[in-house]
Structure formats: C-alpha cells, structure tokens
Length: 121
Image (tube, rainbow, N blue to C red; front, side, top):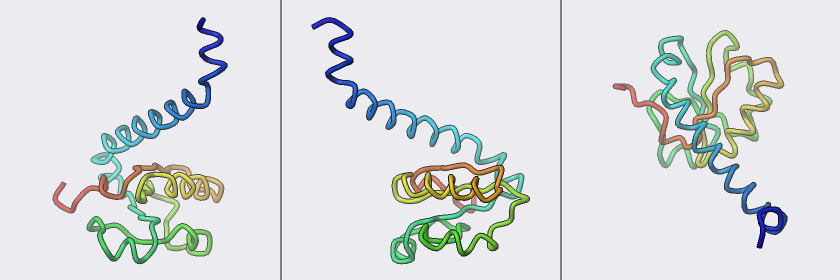
C-alpha cells in the first residue's frame, strides 16, 4: 500500500489521533500558563454538572454547568482571564466557544478539572 492509499483509507483515524494530540498539547500549554493566569486574577470555572462538581472539585473553582452558562455569564467578569474545565475537555471546549462568542477575550480550556490549581500551588 502506498502513502496516498494509506491516507485515503485511514484518514478518519489519523484525524481522530490529531484531535486527541491537540487536546493533550493545549491542556499542557494552559497548565504551564497557570501561574501567570492566577497572578492576573483568573477565574476558574468548572462546567461539569452540579452533581459531578459536588462529588469532587478543585478548591477555588466556581461551578457553572455548561447548560446554564449562557444564562449565568454575568457571574464571570470579562476583565480577567477565564480558565474553563470539565471531565475531559469537551464540555469546556464548548464553554470556551460560548464565552468567546459573548465577548470574553482571554479564555483558556484546561481540559480535565483535576488540572485546576490547588490553593497552595
């Protein structure tokens, strides 16, 4: 099998692998930026459901479930960076798009909520 045939046959798998690689890379990039974001007064928003948040969460995060985010935008200031997270990064990716669409300029998707900083870090 030559290279063009390989890509033609396996492009969906390659696209999926690239998508996961991008999510992994972007999450690591945001984690590396956390000290600077925190210094700039970032707000950390966990967009998981209230039940998921109640079962485990990172100190200092606020819980605004994704389905409520559009109606609760006033709770998030536009003047500071916003870092969103969820269980895997998918819902927080949607939250990032929603916030950007509503005029938030400095929004970052950390991916999994467990990557949010603890109070001591």
